[in-house]
Amino acid sequence: MQTWDVVIIGAGAAGLMCAAQAGYRGRRVLLLDNAKQAGRKILISGGGRCNFTNTHAQPDAYICHNSHFVKSALSRFSAHDFIELVERHGLNYHEKTLGQLFCDESAKDLLEILMTELSWSGANLQLRTEVLKVIRTDTGFLIQTSAGELQCLSLVVATGGLSMPKLGATPLGLQLAEQFGLHVYPTRAGLVPFTLHAEDKVRFAQISGVSVACEVHSLSGMRFRESLLFTHRGLSGPAILQISSFWQAGEPVWINLLPDVKAGDWLQTLSRDRPRVSLRKLLSEKLPKRFVDIWLETDIADTAIGQLPLKRREQLAEQLNHWELKPNGTEGYRTAEVTLGGVDTDELSSKTMECKNIPGLYFIGEVVDVTGWLGGYNFQWAWSSGWAAGQVV
Ligand code: FDA
Image 1 (cartoon, rainbow, N blue to C red):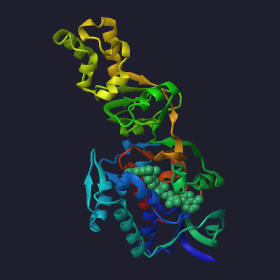
Image 2 (image 1 turned 60 degrees about the horizontal axis):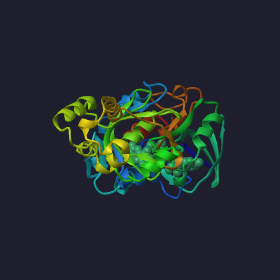
Image 3 (image 1 turned 90 degrees about the vertical axis):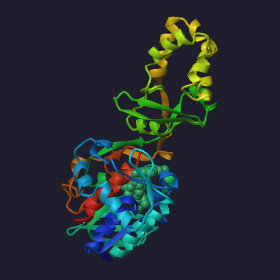
Image 4 (image 1 turned 135 degrees about the vertical axis):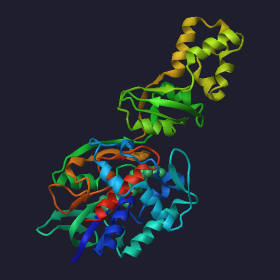
């Protein structure tokens, strides 16, 4: 039977980082994955250019039942530490917006860096391997796999979230947590497009591809100022993906279509200064025309603003600054970027990611109840938590 110091299940972002760190410390490391390639989510992320970190990766950009948990790992291996690593390998990258760093060319360049680090560290990678059973022993863990039995002192679970099952996502990590008696928070899809009720779906499918700069907020009070994209299935775009992580089924969301404008004052000024101009024309000066054509109620679209009764003008102003929309649901794990919930952080050391009650067992990356905002925060959590465990396994 093969014996290792460290076995890591999951050769994604967190597992690759952890394996290299442990390998550099002279540990004998085996990194296992059921897929035929390591880091598949890295390759498809950020539209193929991987938004690999965010220069503003602070604890308040993470959703976790214990908001203090992420602080230690994020400060010990920060966005700047990861940037330093990729710069050492000569990666060309750029900031797109809001601190989001992307590869200039391709996410392949980033994966290549991680694979180079893995090989320099001496850690071993074994793909296409199913984990069948994990048993705790006196000295560590026994792992039965489709390629035979393994023994190890430290076992790291880095199996990621449930999103995109097509890319190899499985619930193994959550099942192992439950097997070892750890509390797991219920999971749901995050950073995911909304679907709409039938009537709204038909209405807005006509403007699929149209994007509107806006501010969206949820009942939780979270708000994001980004763009919203109409699709043939519902709503997407950064504003919607962000708010989806704070939305609960059955709740509405509110969209401020003119976040820089007090719509009531604006419409009042227009009705005084340009009373003969139609609402359709006036709104199209601030919003995409195709959107206005669909969104504005047909009975007033061609009304001159000076003719609009005061009550309707006030209603319209409310709609412009506070449009309430009730999603039907989300597209679920099929298209979600992340999984909310997961292994309760109270079970883990925030410094090492080791289970408090099961020495030698570690959980890192997305399988843990830590979910970042859109914009490179999720990879940063994978790097930081993987690095933290890599120092001690
Ligand atoms: P990750 O999912 O990377 O790796 C888990 C690994 O475990 C996989 O290799 C999988 O095959 C393996 N595994 C699963 N079950 C197993 C089993 N039973 N046996 C063996 N191996 C198993 N984030 C970000 O910060 N910037 C971005 O640009 C994007 N973009 C993006 C796009 C899309 C389409 C998605 C789906 C996700 C993103 N993300 C993102 C999120 C980001 O990809 C995610 O948070 C990290 O990859 C999480 O890293 P982990 O290592 O925890 O899991």
